[in-house]
Length: 279
Image (cartoon, rainbow, N blue to C red; front, side):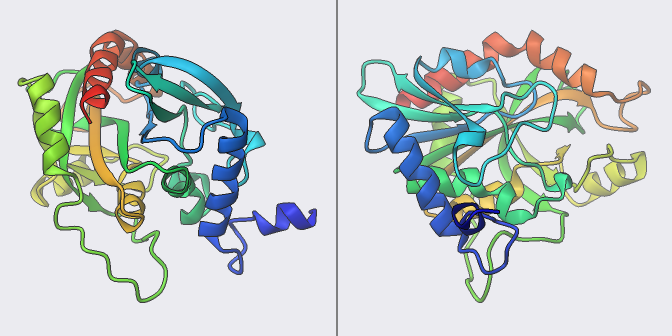
């Protein structure tokens, strides 16, 4: 490993993860030619086409060219990030086509590296999306749901040391109100993050429901916590891609997730584009 690579190794406890984020942001500034981005979008399963409707892609950067980032590990995700012009506002969105999941075993620092890089690149707002299982029968596959709160069942946190961060209003009430102005039919729900990569058992889904959960998945909460620590305003949006285990008699599959995302791509893309245009 070269000295430069070692300095960017997020798995090394001696590495400063915020310094790696600053190094990544420097590469993004150099490649895009702009000093700062304003809004970051993390596109989860089923959201891949949504970024196309946010605005014109000005620059595409391969993840592997940016310190701390790696290749996409999940089918349906893109292994690149884009700098997107938000209409004629002069603002830029930093759009991530993939994320690092906790179940990949690369550590929590890698999971939240994109969030910290967004903050280092100048973003003040982040929109975190995911594909998830729905616990409410009325939410058919293809239904977008705003995240009002989360339950983190990973038993981990991205915050290190005695740094006590308030999560009371983690998922911005202001941004949720903006999204509901765009689409008044949007429901809200509590997202429950499991570790994965296996889907939840019917018993675990029942537990999540008893705890107050409405949505189950394998991402988002760790990223949202890191976003709050970095001072970003957070909007979380889940796309219900399937009924959670035990809610529907059908077996779960990733192909079902991708199909639901493709079917809802235009609606989700328009929603993101309109929301980003207003924040």
